[in-house]
Length: 328
Image 1: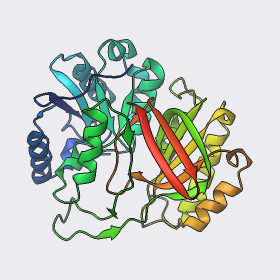
Image 2: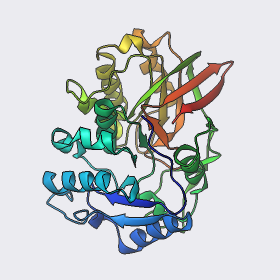
Image 3: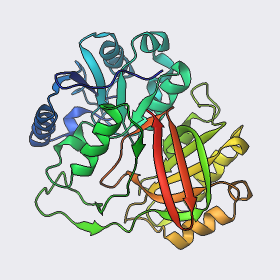
């Protein structure tokens, strides 16, 4: 099930299934709203999205109520999350999946929202989206690539050829919009050659793994997994990524996974291409599938928007990558 695409004039509802809208400065909140407006969208905010507790989140009841209300409201055409966090998996047991299935619409966010997006797709068959948070729209500079792939994925039905970005950043842009640390992007990194087509699942790896052993974990048979992780493990990132990937490999039907796309790593990790290749090489189950890294998604900028439950096609050969989204 593919939600209806966005059009200029549509209303977008902002919800906070993880951390609160109160985390944003008023300046960045207004910038994000203004930038949505420049694309012709109207922005509304859920009733409880500013509520905050000791963890800068809100009660399960409030978060569930806001999500249900957003899906029920016929004026709302898409739902964007404020930001990520740590606890969107708390609400999964309390969601009305029939309500969501009967009122399909775009749901978009990343990071901790990986749990929510994959769970909804698993339980309803509706495509959800890994992409920009509402907060990301506050960015003043280096936003063009983000906008291009937002429009291609959420405002068009055409097949998408995903070109690697020309530049990237891993800076605290939301604190200092003028002095950005922009670096040249060297493009995709080939790990294993081959070709594959399959359904897309994944996102933030450690969050995706929270679904293991639950009714909310998608069936990853015939899939292309998109995985990335943030820098919270710091100098232990390499071993943490290794064991998180291993945990995913232990899942039922992993032997039917067709390929893997790995998102760009943050600077504050100990990950190198040499370490990544070593991790992949040590896993027998990965040797026969196409894999490439340095995709434009994860916890750096810029990022594509991609469909959870949609389909991708990857061709990795002669040290070149062709990366397409077919159904979104």
